[in-house]
Image (cartoon, rainbow, N blue to C red; front, top):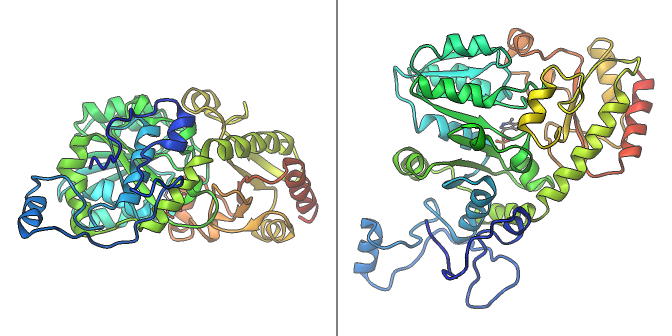
Length: 400
Ligand SMILES: Cc1ncc(COP(=O)(O)O)c(C=O)c1O
């Protein structure tokens, strides 16, 4: 919806300007900061105005399940940043992901997805969609032949995460986009790990990009949120009708928090990514670690592809403790600066044991297939001093 109150102003084009001013609209009070509109509905001067709005003859806010001025500012800022035609915000990342698929598929359709997915994404693909009559197939996302085989038959959609949570697998987006299009489907990319500033899936041929805005976009552990970015046609034909009638709307307060989060998104992600890179290189080869996975390290199995697709390695690394679950828990418990949490992309450094938390639900077989061992630890690097974070990790490794 075009909600521009200052129609003469041109859209900003430079990233830093977009992050501060994209979508900015002001009320008659000329406030500096974006306003929060905590309203569920809107009023009409006459019954005829209400009728015209419902007929779609006038463009205006009708009900906050359909649209809200603060939510619209967030959508427009993220749309400009992503370089997409359209953006729809949702209440969480999972509602964005579910909506992006559910609005498109019907019983009898096929969906192909990479196996290395966040636990709840995996549940959508392997349990919820099949219950609705959708055939789904999982492939090893790093194997180009596996994609070619799976996409030699028609699909409605392909869904993947790159980098994946938590194993940081990198998938060739351009290759999968080409195969998906030839199979008649749309490529949907969960870009949460890279964040909208480090990777632009649309430039590699993706059709739809989804976010958990809870992660880097808020990035300060405050609110849940999500977003779907795509063509206007996908929104008009599929997404908007689905969201309007199922209602996973983002609240105005959460939208405002995300709008303000975006102002510092580039600064935060670059600083965390630089620290993650430095920590990963210093941890590599540590005797208590069986492996250190970080896309910007030359030792990462898809390092070159990662560096073609991403501006830097991102804020997350995955380490495997040389030991069993007990030793791994001892490492987590010995950390003092890192908080044990299932979240990521935060200004506070967070540590997660995926096998017992975020990926518990997919079971031992699902974890084995996705390369998630009992001793794998996910480290989300925040904005604290990188030297102090490294000291904390090395001291905790001594406890193993
Ligand atoms: C890759 C990925 N996608 C989606 C989600 C879901 O996002 P949310 O928790 O905002 O629903 C998460 C995190 O929890 C995630 O890590």
